[in-house]
Amino acid sequence: MIRFLRAAFAASFLLVAPAFAQDHDGTIHHADLNLSAPFTRATLPNAPVGGGFLSIQNAGADADRLVSASSPAAAMVQIHEMAMEGDVMKMRQLADGLELPPGETVTLAPGGFHLMFMGLTQAFVEGETVPVTLVFEKAGPVELDLPVMSAAADAAHTMSH
Amino acid sequence: MTIKSIRLWLWGAVAALALTAIVAAVLLRQPEQTGFGRGSYNLIDQNGQPVDQTVFVGHPTALFFGFTHCPEVCPTTMAEMASWFEQLGDEGQDLRAYFVSIDPQRDTPEVLGDYVSWVSDRITGVTGTPEEIAKIAKAWGVYYARVDLGGDDYTMDHTASVFLLDASGEFQGTIAYREDQATALGKLRNLLAKS
Image 1 (cartoon, one colour):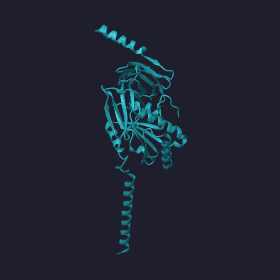
Image 2: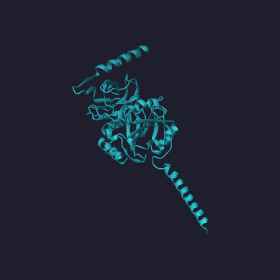
Image 3: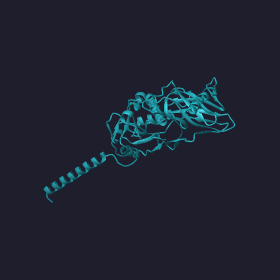
Image 4: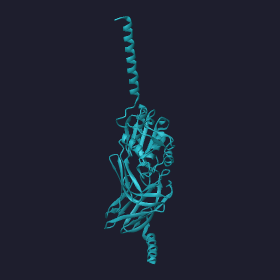
């Protein structure tokens, strides 16, 4: 059993590395998925959480699903939905992950879907990157780096005020 | 009626008027305890100093309710607040900001100190017992609720607006979450002009 687990563990690493190619514009092609414009935001002092954002295009004919995420920079990464109801901010964990319909692009962005990094091992510093592994139901795992933007950045490439 | 009794009666009238004036003065000095933003509570700031309802009097105020385990709304609003202070410069020197934690179990004064100091030296972090936090939140009609995330982890749903108070502590309006910066600055300049 242990040998099997070890083999599975090793195999999971093999699956991660060669499975994607990267465009000159930074878009990562991973099976039928195109992952673009990833970013996170600089954290305030003592803030133990951070949000992660990117666009996921499903160019395939079948639906896929972002089922989990992990990062060495956080004790846990969850998939969340944020919504404003009137002037109240509400957050929900998407326990079943995030559906990626065929032919559509799902955007994780401030004010909506996001990765929530919990129990940060260190502050996110503008200009650095935060590694994250995303696991998709069909496309499998993929690693990418989220560039850290300013604390109020709306997108991967914003002009500073 | 003798001169003496008239004099006595007049002195009585003077005494009654004086008493009325004193009572009126005392009553008028008491802030109203009901109405939007009215309440009494005993909280502490990031340095452990006491904070109550009187801190909002004497300067215009931007008041926000949040928590440090907040991934988005709070850091975004803090970053925007930092840019308001920066943009207003000397014009905003009377403005004070308060960040009241609606997660006092985790937001100790020590945790809040560094967090708010990133914004400005004119923002005060406020925390306290859950009971006292509930009082100030009720006064401002602020909604907050714990949302469990598995294990011991949780996040908070909460009202995300910034409340604007004039120098007498009266509510003057709000800046909505992610309100356009020019609009927000316009509201703050308006508040400063009135205060």
